[in-house]
Length: 487
Image (cartoon, one colour):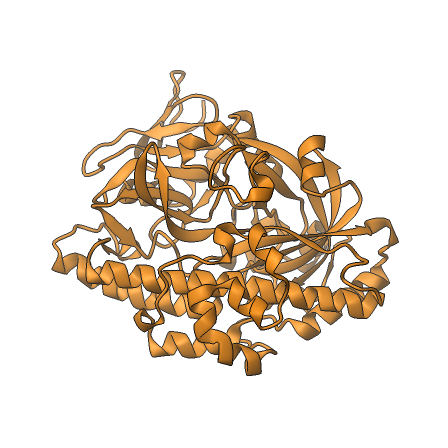
């Protein structure tokens, strides 16, 4: 018998009693200062990772915050973060609190999928190398890098943070129809730059159109398998197709906002007599001045991130035009969808208006949901789940059963090794895990912490919610070439 297991579907993990609650769902019943239950979606294989970090403790802490609505949720890719675990979902009623730590430092880190009419069979390694070199020419990568469009982006920065993607489209980056394929149409209302520090503004003005480091990437991928023919056709996907996935967020702008407001909200909690279990969950009443200011600043970073991915998409298309000597139209470029991973948004669930914090989780609205964009009313919008740079990525859609997760699904595979442990991976192990995938970084040591070996099995992770009938997998992609930035 494994540690903590008994035959009745009850385990003790990290000191917490965890009870089996149906297929791939486990519950920590509320106790002590918890106001609601915590629920974790994992299968038996992924459940073993819960023994190795503090993600359950972080869920339990979140379940103690004022105004929290049942349940606090851990997604299948859950792992320890700062405050709320990555892969955490927390809904708060209007009389409760807003938490910077439950959104995260990379505000609106998210993923964008771009399809083409190009077939992967025609892309050899030489051509792929040329493409990623040209992409890297246009899109600066790595920590602290400044954008190549500074002359424009500084001028439109104020417009960008308030109006999102529409501002960069007006400046020439893409077309107006792109807005219909972005969560929130590329703009979260309520942004106000006056709630943002000077230091954050200065970082933001220079970083629009940059990729960053860490787990951010631009991948040229091949559609490896179609898992739902009807949905794939409606999304414009076919087997053997070239697609591009872009994963990045609000860069130093969002990071500075999170840093600033973690301090501000931590002090505000004391001021308002709110008990917050740890600084990582720093929170203040939604209706307080501090809480309202954080929302204004967070929304500004959300709009920045949507715009950042829009500019990068524009530059990726330029790179393809340069290398292939073809026009955007002739190559069939079309934005499929753009989803946020780290965000707090007002949504209606069970007839109640709730502030849903998603940290390393993706919204997945089902067919017929009124908040779907018009093109995806009948299907539900695509939810994008990247694996790692050596493994598959997925497009899924949510079902009506996703209501139990506040219409949320996992945002990726989830780390299994800390960055420090992953940096010890040898060159031989790294190269074997990467296989034939081409990458741009000169030394594997610069991205060893992003090795496929550092991540959980994305196939296992995706299957958890599929078997619970919360998601329908639509298509699986495999990477051909990846652009990363060194930390």
